Length: 272
Image 1 (cartoon, rainbow, N blue to C red):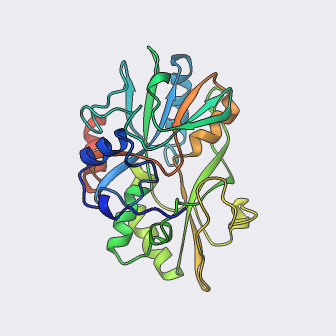
Image 2: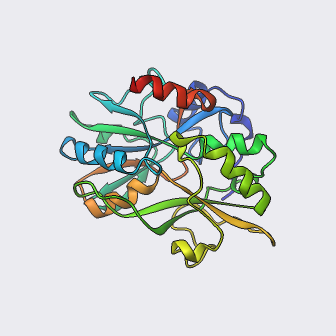
């Protein structure tokens, strides 16, 4: 299903989050709020939070943590006064590892002690690719980015383990090289591609049948470029089987108040 992000490209994150909260936007956020970092979401019961945090530390490329939210669902670092239960266009609920429903407001699921993780997103580096003249196919075609479970295994922590999920963007070999050079400098939003070339080598049998998102056209002479993806925790949740987990719906992100160009410096300063 095609959708139009044009009205939201130059809006501020705060304005777009408000429109999401009001139910005006319930579609993928790639390309919205040009220049601002976007984030994936995982909300867990407290007894799973420490293991999940360890999982993110062991797997920093698919799971770069931008902020951990405790107490209330309100964010501070990534957007003062924003709310991770209302400010994402679509959420997924997993019960005992099974995806059971999708909704546009997750407020009823937040309970005392729950912990939210905002995780870096590859939508954040797309702006840099576009600026260098590299077409980002899913944005050009008004589709959700295609994402695949690969045969690259993540490192296990407690009950959390599973395949790395990768997002894929087709491009010319020359643009793929350029994209590698651009994104390797952005470790907090997944960094460099993990694979360029034959999808079968990373266990993807049919490139036109993604596990999440929508297939995009691939033109003659193009290569497929795979990046680590923040949907990886959803695959790990299927294995860990907590009684309840709330995540973003793939492609439907939390838009932060931090500019992509400032994100690495901001997070490094926070660590200190």
